[in-house]
Amino acid sequence: MHKRVIAFGDVHGCVRSLRALLGEIQPTQQDTLVFLGDCVDHGPGSREVISELIGLKEKCCVVPILGNHEEMMVRFLEGRTQADDWLQCGGKETLDSYEGVGHPEAVWSEHVEFIKGWRDFFETNHHFFIHANYDEEVPLLAQCWDVFRWQSLREVVPGPHCSGKTAIVGHSSQKKGEILDLGYLVCIDTYCHGTGWLTALEPETGEIWQADREGRLRK
Image (cartoon, rainbow, N blue to C red; front, side, top):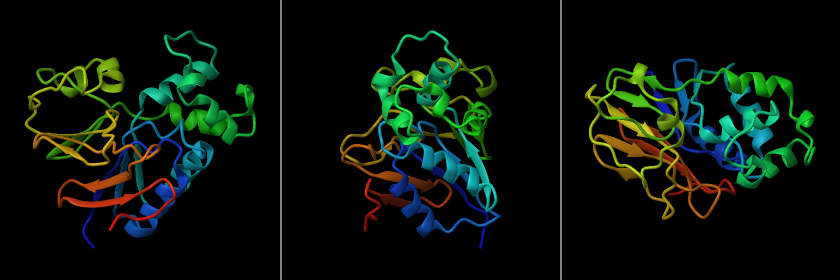
């Protein structure tokens, strides 16, 4: 089997969806799985999703990208101020998954430390992977973190990046459940926690796997 780099869109606590896709993909030690951020919040299984990612490290290379929801979660748990109320942005469901509604100390410390180590971006020879958006004229190492994590494609649709690589992004949920493919930019947040799908994509081959929030595979 060839080495695969497979990107996963925003999981948002939909652990059944994630497990269904992993069952289909059957990752091996040769594979790299890139999670584009927003693995937590909204859905019912954020704790289980993080545990799945930690367990996956025994089977393959796992590269999680920090999303705005992970950023909000960590800031809330550390008692830092922020513009948005995390509990109103899906954080309540995340605390519910740890059986500690309103009690930050219920969140497992090993999960918090794991999330703190997530990356801003990842790149291969032909693609780069980020959570949200990018400045087309700025090299990846010089990008502004809030654009990477917060800027929606509904605010700004960038042009092709100066690296010449194709961007694989999440964050901007595609409410109809279909991938947004601009050629130089592919958004695979297909609204899993709503009425869409969790999408996994192997960019080099174009192979796609999708499952709804109940774990039913899309044929």
